[in-house]
Length: 172
Ligand SMILES: CC(C)(COP(=O)(O)OP(=O)(O)OC[C@H]1O[C@@H](n2cnc3c(N)ncnc32)[C@H](O)[C@@H]1OP(=O)(O)O)[C@@H](O)C(=O)NCCC(=O)NCCS
Image 1 (cartoon, rainbow, N blue to C red):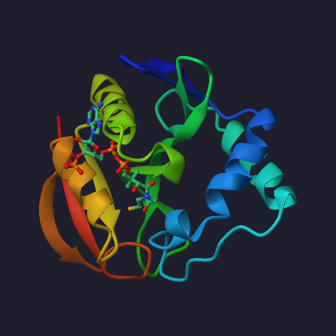
Image 2: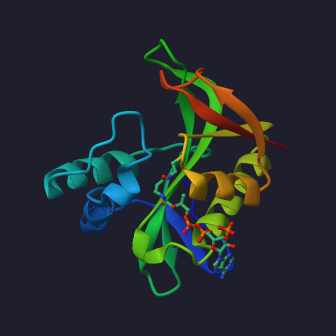
């Protein structure tokens, strides 16, 4: 995974020392409520440690899960690029999804927009022609983010994750 920089942010691989942040973020209902169709908050630091390890193990020049850091080293959230799972299958497809999870303490500063724009640029710089995002009904902050980074709303779809989502698309 490569490290990315933007005006205020650094996007880097997850490290084991980030597990307490990961737990703090994913143990909150505000963060989890629109993640998947059966969301649950994270219960233990052990789960966060295992997740942090898994996220940090991605070794791919294009895809990955970036920890988003302020200039002073404070971690504020994550942006990811991954192959999306098609409904009715267990495998990942060739379609590339961008996603974002930020800690509520850092919402509303434009960090998510800035980090997502940078990761999208990384995808296009890497010759990816199309990146999609999917949002569950009611996730207005995420829909606004999609629009702010120039993604087009293609309407409702059941093509992914065995649930109905709004599909957004960005093309190079
Ligand atoms: C979706 C999510 C990442 C959005 O985060 P956010 O903090 O609201 O996003 P930002 O701060 O980047 O943008 C929010 C607003 O802050 C504004 N803003 C405030 N200060 C800013 C600054 N200095 N620079 C730029 N924008 C700024 C933006 O313009 C934007 O305005 P808008 O809502 O009118 O578009 C966040 O709600 C989240 O983590 N949710 C839980 C996880 C989740 O649901 N993920 C998505 C699953 S599909």
